[in-house]
Length: 303
Image 1 (cartoon, helix red, strand yellow):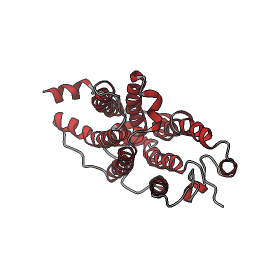
Image 2 (cartoon, rainbow, N blue to C red):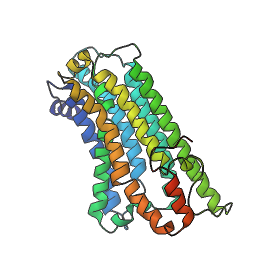
Image 3 (cartoon, rainbow, N blue to C red):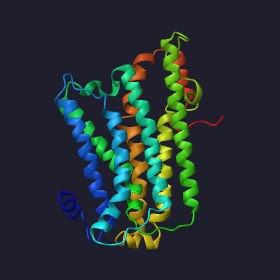
Image 4 (cartoon, one colour):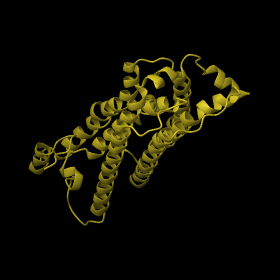
């Protein structure tokens, strides 16, 4: 009964897109609140240990929900259930693959280090820490916007489009860059703890190509999923199935994912939190200044 009532409340008769997006947003918010509120107010001191792990689990949950929710609605209304489309499975699987990889890496890192320096200013201000949990729900919702929209469509083009090839190519390239960067950084830290080198900051591997390769890879992979989404969300039959949305709306639904990701990483919680910290620690060193001067911030140099 509760599930049926929830399906009814979040059913927008003229917008399959909203009928899928709103419950997914509510699910993301609920999961973040379920872990974020106790982590902020029921432990002393407040902890961020489960922040990234919860984010990863929420990403997987939202991807699965957006995939199956339209079919639950079909079953509840007595309609035949449409089969899962290969593109929907591929997009949802890509999100799950990325979230599992990154979530596992970040959870192991924080369990090893004991804390995350990004949250230091927030631990003495619980309201700010709680805001970070809710902001993660917004980030998950917006990043998965193209996936949620494609999963809301009952019938999609079966043939492989050039946007599929380009988009998934960008996704796997970005995933590889992010994974290699994280592995190189983790190996460097472990070697430093084992006193195998005395370097103060990381300049090896991909970090010799750009200062934040994992951020570049993250933005690239979400751009890839957005390209796949845009390839079908701008087609007439798909736009009609989503309630008659315009081409501009279809492009916006896809583009919000990499746009918000790059904004978060470059303007809010990524570079703006890391760069001042490194400048304060190493800003008086000539080798650090040389690395900053010769190494691009975001887009890797090829030669």
